Length: 432
Ligand SMILES: Cc1cc2nc3c(=O)[nH]c(=O)nc-3n(C[C@H](O)[C@H](O)[C@H](O)COP(=O)(O)OP(=O)(O)OC[C@H]3O[C@@H](n4cnc5c(N)ncnc54)[C@H](O)[C@@H]3O)c2cc1C
Image 1 (cartoon, rainbow, N blue to C red):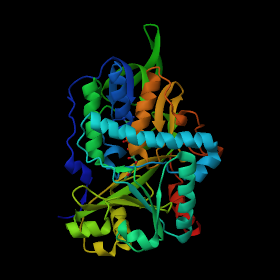
Image 2 (cartoon, rainbow, N blue to C red):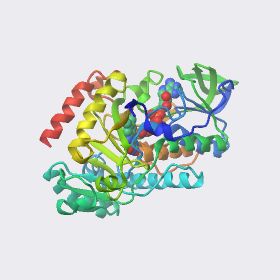
Image 3 (cartoon, rainbow, N blue to C red):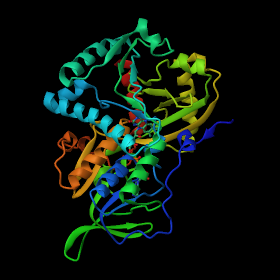
Image 4 (cartoon, protein in one colour):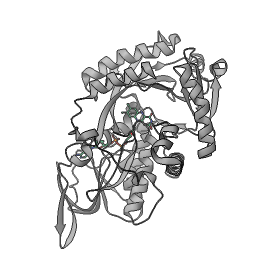
């Protein structure tokens, strides 16, 4: 099979197909913008509470990062624990870490309750150290996580690493048994099915062009002109992640879209698959410019990274395939002859402080900024912000932290500095 510029996960999933001729409703309680993990999880929760919900998606269900990712359902956040504590203090960092563990439960519970067939499995994750000093830091991190957050990680010295990974380039590793893996396209398709079952309506090819304050029969709400007609909503929830646009300038200025790319090999012989990943972990390395990889449930090596820094297009996808193949062989020389069958890219969302942010901004609800940890956290934030909209007061530390814009306000939502960011990450990897 020749290499396809296509998302492998999509070949394994069936999506609900909302009737394209059904007009968008004139009035709803909540308009949810974006049909990814965030929006669909919010829609499910709100519809279960009896709200009339319309999910407005400019493409198709799961079209964004939610069907394109590595399917790693990870504990923790992108920022290391020491950085978290230094930025927010012990108590807040504890609440954040607890939320990350709760987000794992949240995904597992939805998968179980809705019987979503997405190969969810608590296979654990393995972080591998690219330098001795990264490995030395694992001991310290594991200790802080155990003492402060009551969560146990296992540090694996280099001499024992072959029990975890069939590569000899790393200085050791750290295992978290609580993390999980899933097939993200099947998961997002199932989440959409569960939102529909709860009573939410999903409208595909319904791009929202603006969100305007408007009153109707004396009630304040929002007017949303879309490519399929105008919707009036009491409340709006924005879940557009890395695809956030000028529709919400206030969010666009705070979110940096970053391209990430993935290749998958042909199906590997069982013995070779066992050799490269004996415990079937979700694996990523310790660099800023990191590689992440895992076996798919049908035994392909899925290997991803931020190969090109611009969001995906035909050129960056093709270039990334070659860069990633070289990266994969540097980790696993034994995969030199494995054919690459699929390559695709997607866009991640980073806030300037690399933290998730959620809550209310200019009267709209939102949740963004997952920085590559969105499978669990996006599902969780969708649910928590929906609970908040329904009048509850759920524990959610990410609504309490400030959401910084660019330093000196120097960003208008057009990522002109991304090649610089790419170069900067590389420099950081040499020096740190
Ligand atoms: C290649 C890649 C690998 C990743 N790997 C992992 C991983 O292994 N583990 C992990 O935890 N996270 C990973 N992530 C991150 C994770 O996928 C995201 O954080 C998560 O999917 C975000 O979900 P979301 O619903 O917020 O956004 P998305 O799934 O991106 O959905 C946003 C949706 O909003 C829609 N939209 C945008 N503007 C409008 C508009 N004006 N009107 C209507 N609709 C609009 C878009 O079409 C899109 O479908 C990865 C991301 C990428 C790209």
